[in-house]
Every structure is written in structure tokens, then in C-alpha cells.
Image (tube, rainbow, N blue to C red):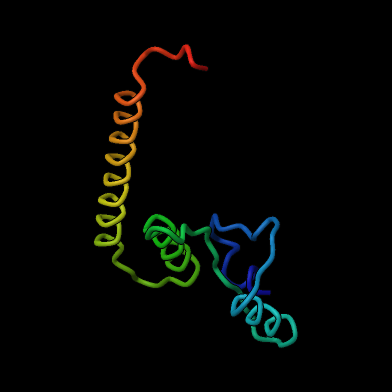
Length: 108
């Protein structure tokens, strides 16, 4: 019922597999038992770091499905900064690995 009410005119697709727990599961269960259309938006997250890209996807889904006006500009800037930070970190780690071991791999 929720999908027909809110998602038919969007590119948002239902979850293909997996399971829900906690508050999301409770909301969906109540939506099945009652006539009120209920849905939850979920996105994979990275618990060790802020997942700004996932937050942007979630807000975009809300904007598309419920015609909510949200300015995602500041969050997009934050996401770009986080991405640049992790890219620089990966480059430093790659440089450290190559400096540490050199070209002689005879021990392998």
C-alpha cells in the first residue's frame, strides 16, 4: 500500500532481501496490521565513520517520495570533504606500504 501511494512515480525500489529489526521492523509490522500505509527508508551505513553519502541518498528518497523541500547542499559539501579525507588517507597508506617494503619481495 505504501509503495503504491508514494513510490510508484520514483526510482526508489523495495528492499530485495535482508531483514529489518528494531524500530524499522516495528513500524513495518504495525503497517501490515493496520490500514495506515507505512514504509521505512533504510540505507547501509558505516558505523566507524559518518556516512554522509548514505544520508544524502536517504534525504533524496524523502524528497522524491513525499515532495519535501530539503537543502542538501551543506551535507553534500560535508560528504565531499569526508571522501577527500579518506582518499588522502588511502594514498598515505599506499605510500607508507611501498616505502616500508621496497621492491625486494624474495621473502615471499
